[in-house]
Image (cartoon, rainbow, N blue to C red; front, side):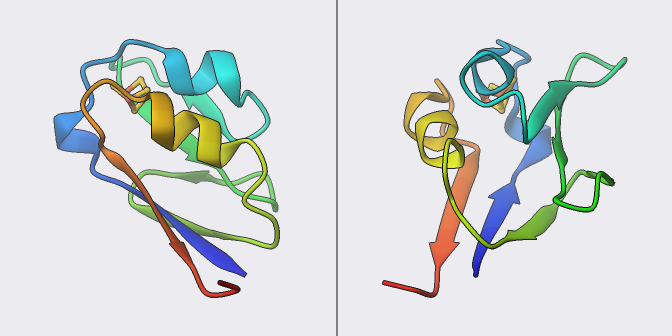
Length: 74
Ligand code: F3S
């Protein structure tokens, strides 16, 4: 399991996370990113995932680095 953490107040709404990882990320109506959990729930602060998968690409590519990954497998 890993925890994906979003510091939403830093998000500038560039949309890269959604473009690279649409399974877990989308843009909300307020122009900020939100996460979509494996249960399909919108999360604005953190979510647990079994597999980091494309969340790594989203975190690496976010221009303001507001996505963090806490990987307990490594
Ligand atoms: Fe926001 Fe970063 Fe995504 S700025 S829209 S969280 S890539």
